[in-house]
Length: 385
Image (cartoon, rainbow, N blue to C red; front, side, top):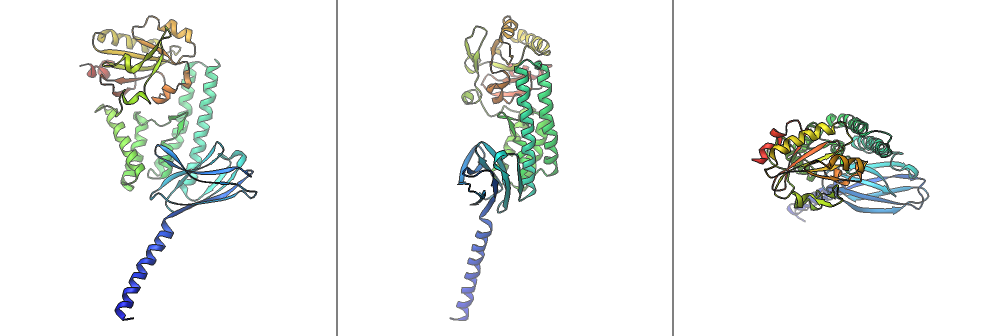
């Protein structure tokens, strides 16, 4: 072999070696560990993507409880989870790391240790904070339904429970807004409802901090683009620059409302309010704020009733008889959701406090979420012109 051929061979060998070493080093991540008290149970590994959950692997646990999943990474930092029965352990995976988990099958979602990165530890702590808030939220719902607390007490205590999670979560977020745990903290839910609401002025600040950091450090990541676009839409909505990007037509599956009125007739939001500027108002007549709130709506409605204006008011009162007596003389559309604080409709609109009012324009677009009804002329009048 000539010197030239030898040099050429060495170059090719070096390039191939680097390629294979790179593949071996950067292509996979490992999640391993032990689950005691779980013999013969099936452990699942799932990929938590934006919009869906993908099953990746599973195994039947043996006497030892040892497990090991090794898979190709998605090309960027991402979220996975282990599922045992109905219990979950959330796992942030940064590229090629190895994550070790020691868990107890009898209390899988809470009784575990995790080692692999600071994000792994932080996500566990955030998950437990969310679980605590969720338990308190459900307790308050039960107390309200059983008549042990008033609707005002329910509102106050729910807000307190959510704010407790937010305050603690913000410490993780602001400590490192570009981290996976910061992203994770933003999208925690209770009963399908986001705890941090990007369309709320105060919560938006937190979304903005994380979105800016992710856009700076991971501009090409799918999650970064999704978060940044969400933050931009929220900011424009808060400033009133343009409507949110969903319509009543699009909302048939997600935002349509069809509930009974005081005559027990089903009334559809999209059909009854088509072509009109509409205030979609979530309230409870049993609240002490209700009379003042309805007076403000009535004054505005009386002034503009000859214009294409409608109010579609959803009551979440537990006492249907009370609601019917209070609504019988109101001049707008009054409907009642018997699910009360368990309302799926309220969850769809991410309603955390009552009253909450949205403005829908005549094209069926949600253009604004009102902070209050103190200045309806300024907040809504522009859409009636």
